[in-house]
Length: 296
Ligand code: GUN
Image (cartoon, rainbow, N blue to C red; front, side, top):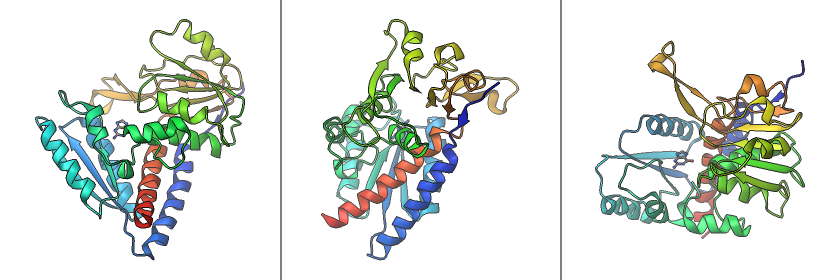
């Protein structure tokens, strides 16, 4: 039985983090100390874990971080006030408002209030627009940027490839297709985005040379949906109840890894695939924001 080559996201992320650390030292010699502000609203358990991981990576790479924790009942005006303060603070080069935000806060309005120059998440409409236009001067959302970097560093040919993305979210699916359809090196793919109203998703998947799952359904991608030799990237993080596991649940991706690895040519494990890349790209975006601020 053949088995897909594993795309080691942890190892590739470590390589990028090493490059970022070197860049931090370099700009440090010019007197620039990159600073990243985290804003977390409410007590979403997953958000606490994610922000904690990002804080620790900042400390490791020499990025100064500050976390602002606000109660779930925070008003829009209060949150906008904090963002205005951070936008004006010259030591803060990047601002990350952790999603999801508790209702009735409107994420679109909040993300639009982060200065585009500090928007290391790439969620401000100015950066979303730059990505669509192919302007490399903006910030690209970290998860799809991380998937792209995984494909590049795994020497996956993207020009002319049939790429199928599952999931039309603003954080992954939509920016993912925008990256891969660019007329640019490591892009030039033919992209298809499938969602809940797509007819015959399995049929689309079976045509894919590169299949990227960000649909939020545990083990959605089964072996019979994958073309032999295809590259499969699993972005999903789904909680499934498991009485035997610590906390009563475990995390599974959007891909049936054990089944699909027997068909695919290359596959990301989950965990250990896309997750570490998201953090690595956030760190890289932050150091870039700091260097750009010094030049402006
Ligand atoms: N929630 C899930 N993914 C992300 C992300 O990339 N950035 C932020 N801010 N929140 C998220």
